[in-house]
Amino acid sequence: MEKYKEIIPEYKAFQKEVEKDPVASVRRNNLKARPDFEEKLAKDFEVEKSSWNKDVYRLGRIDNPGTSMLHWRGEYYVQEESATAPVEILNPKPGDHVLDTCSAPGGKTTQIADKINNTGIVVANEKSGQRMKSLHANVYRTGAFSANTLNLDGRRIPEDTEYDKVLVDAPCSGEGNNCRRKEKAASEQQTKDISKLQVDLLKKALNLVKPRGTLVYSTCTFSPWENEQVVSKALNDTTSLERIKLDFNHCRGLESFEGEEFGSEMDKTVRIYPHHLKSGGMYVAKFRKKS
Ligand SMILES: C[S@@+](CC[C@H](N)C(=O)[O-])C[C@H]1O[C@@H](n2cnc3c(N)ncnc32)[C@H](O)[C@@H]1O
Image (cartoon, rainbow, N blue to C red):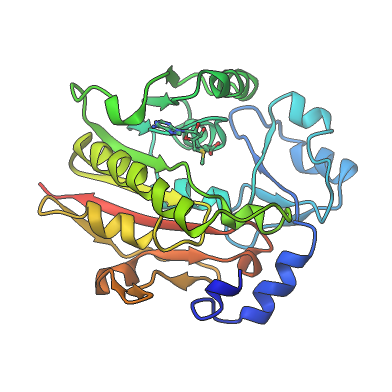
């Protein structure tokens, strides 16, 4: 991660956090959670509530958050605290029609279904047939029955329907998580190659947003080629970026990197580094479709 030393303020805190085991966290699924949820969770784990997301509970640096009966009953979903931010930013409301273009294994799809209280519709699309299995299992376990699944390349979703809200949680090089799991980092070339697919997925998804509707683009990587560069390439006359406000420590998007200019608008987007929430890295941008 040395290559990002210049762009990550508090680099020492960042480095210290990625050297530790990750803090496990779960998101309460309000579609299934019973009134004694917190009490039961506290019997199984040492629990700390998230400071900004009322549904998220930190369980410490453990490696088995899925062992509780609460998990099998669908009362919670094991999810990185930072990974809950994109849907919080998208802010789906009951009755909304929402498209999730890259949805397996369903962490954010099930979070959207919870937010809309299973009213409205969530179209959960996923390209990989293999990963559809985990998506279906999670939709079933969590009772996210407003979710309708679709097995298409996100670049080929028919344009016969427009959505109030769209999420593009793009396939990415995963630097925000693999640095903590001590996995091999993607090469500079790999991150540049995947950015072409990300631009195509994002441009396509922007066509599927209703006038005045919103779209959130997110990745779990640090690479500016997959984040700010993708967003700057997808912006056009029919869209604008909305400034994201968060109630926890975070960084703003980069206006430039290694001589490449992305524009001052990128300051409206956010970067969440592992030391901010003791969680994975995330990048999030919010688009508004003009009327
Ligand atoms: C970051 S993961 C999504 C995680 C998911 N949103 C969640 O919260 O659980 C990206 C997903 O995009 C899928 N994907 C890759 N290429 C795609 C494409 N062209 N169209 C749609 N999905 C694609 C991958 O198989 C992967 O499941």
